[in-house]
Amino acid sequence: MLEVARIRGGNPIKGSLRASGSKNSALPILAAALLTHETVTLHNVPNLSDVRFMVEILKHQGAKIENPKKGTWTITAEEITHRTPYDLVRKMRASVCLLGALVGRLRQAEMALPGGCIIGIRPIDLHLKGLETLNCIVEVESGVIKVNAEQARGENVFMGGPMGSTVTGTANIIMAATLTPGLTRIESAALEPEISDLCSLLNKMGAKISGHGTPLITIEGVEKLHGCEHTIISDRIETGTYLVAAAITGGDLTVTHCNPQHLTAFLEKLKEVGVNIETSEDTIRAFGQPTQAVEIITEPYPGFPTDLQAQFMALQLKVPGRSTFTEKIYPSRFMHAAELQRMGAEIAIEGSTAAVYGDRPLSGAPVMASDLRASAALILAALAATGETWVQRLYHLDRGYEQFEERLRNLGADIERLPSSAMPKGFAEE
Ligand code: EPU
Image 1 (tube, rainbow, N blue to C red):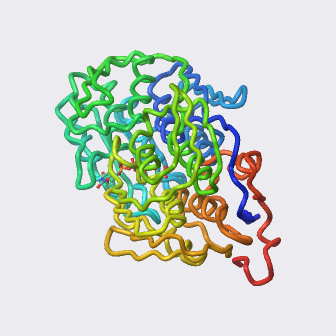
Image 2: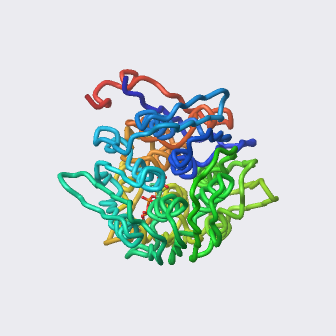
Image 3: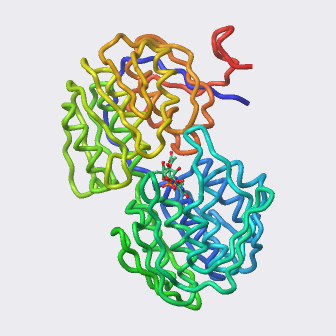
């Protein structure tokens, strides 16, 4: 059944909220559990459709998986297969992070090549080049990647590309290198906190990784990894999204159990536009409304995250003047702009820059979510619009936000999830 969100704007978002575990940490970490025969127990795993899907893929690979309580999963991968078919990979691009785990554990992998997606073409050339540098034989034939790692040895691997370092590519090489003989040095490694979280899990499993969180990661291959218990870090993008919800509605929200240090660039921009921010070691409070236009350039961590670009664009619709958003990660990630325009926004796109002319009246409209972060941005704009907004294709939202509308409702929003048949006549997609 197709579902939609109906939002009636105007209510301030107020109160406090506990951050969930990070989606983009959980996905490679679930894959990393395949690197050992023993049981890996993970806590703070978010309940998202992407996570449930990754669990399905791990089951397909042969792992035994249990979910003894909310947020806790145990994975035991005694016997696994090296093959991952297209009908699994195409449903979730992030399934590519299995590649490094299979290469490490089985010395071979055969996986359908993931396609692009709405936010860009998203090649994986750097992943494959990295594996080749580790002396793997890599072939791509009829849409399938075949990796033979029998002769793999540690080497110097460079993970930088035209858009900066690759996050999942770095994760793949790290996973493969943990069980590859010799010393691997990853240069221009991704600095994202999710990479450090993966490395701390792997070190608990017996890997010898140092330098994570810096551009030079060193991995000394070991013969075997073992089980462990690990708690996933909080989701910085989810936290940022809720802080924008507070700011766009002139509310007052405290997010608890989060890590403000993972959001420095984003919080600086919130302050620059005039939102009040208070932080403690693991809480962030945002209150007050934005008043200033801003220039945002998305960059790899620790720069401003592309995954918060759409939400910040929604925020700047409220502010007089011209704000600009330049995408340096996904040059065409502006699908949300056209839908925001349907609500009254004035946005001009030239190349990889979107210019927002703010303070135009926003009014509710039926809009279509195109991807995960775009769907969040549309809901945020709807919270600040007059009248009723209907956001369609909610399944994008469910990939990365746990109980988004329920949690917003608890903070004061007028938002409901309804079957698409509840939409006014002529609005629902067929
Ligand atoms: N790139 C290449 N070649 C490669 C790999 C990447 O040219 O071999 C390019 C990409 O096309 C892109 C840039 O490099 O322009 C960065 O891509 P990266 O590989 O770092 O992205 P990813 O690992 O596929 C992760 C997140 C994304 C997030 C990006 C950037 C996961 C599962 N996904 O993707 O999250 O946008 O890093 O920070 O960790 C999201 O959560 O909404 C999301 C899309």
